Amino acid sequence: MGWQYVIMTRVHPLGKVFGSLADAIAKPGCIRILVDHEGGDLEEGFRIYETLKALGERVEGVVIGNAVSSAAIALMGCSKRLMLRGSSLRFHFPARYNSIEIFLNEDLMQKNRESAMAALRRVEESIIFATGGKMSQDQVRALLKEDRKVFLDEALELGLVHGVADTL
Image (tube, rainbow, N blue to C red; front, side, top):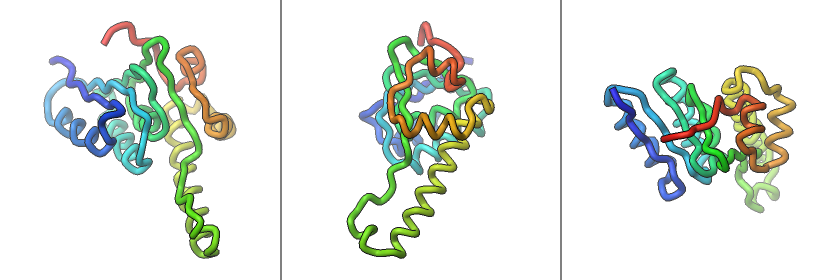
């Protein structure tokens, strides 16, 4: 059985990627996801992450450019994660409801705070799980706060990926 490819690039909204993933799941064989995406809706990223995680050993993710934000979170659901040399990952704190109305309404501020903290916990848990506990919560929070690119050598050291992709 061969590979079923799913392309996650910046021209595809994450919801469309999920549709392509559903098509690949229905076919026999392993799934290879090629990622070069700037992210988008965090809930869509988590939906893809949970699906990939549930598929277990059947899924391999390869970063072929940049895996940013919710696309990087989705990638963490792959049982095997690889990067091409020169590609990068980037994680950051979840962005939630950044409008002036929130700051003028105490109830909305509280709901925003609760929602943001719940999203942060999910992001942290997905990264910690993907690294097999190699990264602590404090290390993950520091990475999120820095909001910077992580290249292959550091990603390997942190346990965010398993190796280098030499071919696709």
